[in-house]
Image (cartoon, rainbow, N blue to C red; front, side):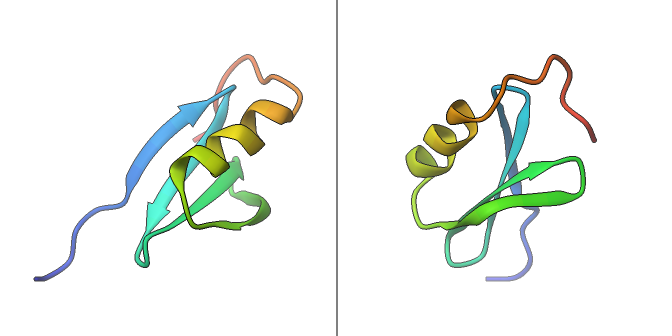
Length: 58
């Protein structure tokens, strides 16, 4: 199996990162927002519910 890089997607200016599990986390810069989500759609819906960010932070 081995190591694989996390998948990263941006929704509404927030970063959604898939980690092992799979678990999906929503970040504003380096700060995690909300809980860990079991599905990407739930993480995207949470990011969409937040105030829109113009530029994603790295």
